[in-house]
Length: 379
Image (cartoon, rainbow, N blue to C red; front, side, top):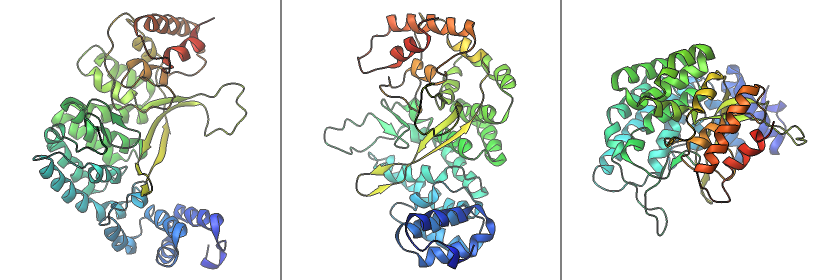
């Protein structure tokens, strides 16, 4: 496509420009558009160009990442090495400065989160060094305190994105942040270099680095192999990390009588709501998903011992209304379709959620046990 072939203005022009990011041959045209367009079309040209390995655009990425929002609205969803190599040194320097600041006082976390957002899916050599820096400094991250963002803020919560947050920011949960960011990166872009990095960091540090290793396996390996390898960790101290990864899965399942537009086919997917927003200032949010499969034996295992105390499952993706935050049962129901074909499993689930609903008292607005009763309550 040439400049003259683009629609003259408006949404059609913006969408046509975005489509140019699918072909490496459009690099020169997109760089020209990034320099000449205005408003939303300029943003579209920059976003499309960021998808390409186009070396002449490198100065643009180096400039954007030094801006107030670090170019997050343009660069977060880009995985090209060209972008990654330009922005990684800036991210590394900023993270080092922020951790030094956080060692001495409560931290304004907006810039910290911009750094995390920009790392998404990027696997260039310099970005891998940023991950290694975070792994080396996980204990410092675990001790960070947050500055208040509104009046009466007790600063006990923490968030990476608008959709990934915890309500009790203990050091144990804070220490997981670098691993959760790498897990999100693997969902966005399971590049072999990121897969190897997950294995490297898990071998070196253990602990929460099992989260991206498990997610990598879910994405890349046969479901039967994943179950055989990782299910033995259930019932051990490592189980909590498996649950963190499972908490990032969500089963898309529309009602049979659904007549509205569908966002995609039914099925289990790794789902992340990335980015953040500040009212009237910026909005860098977007959604990413990757369809995966899970061996049905996991569901039988997770439904064991409904009478027992269940662990807290943090850093979940919440994609339902009226959720019980940090709940094992929220994680579990998100793995399940509306209709379970296996009658044995359906019976197990019915008994599990019936017993859980009797043990766990929740507010009327919490729907997990109502939804379970509706799905599995009858034959």
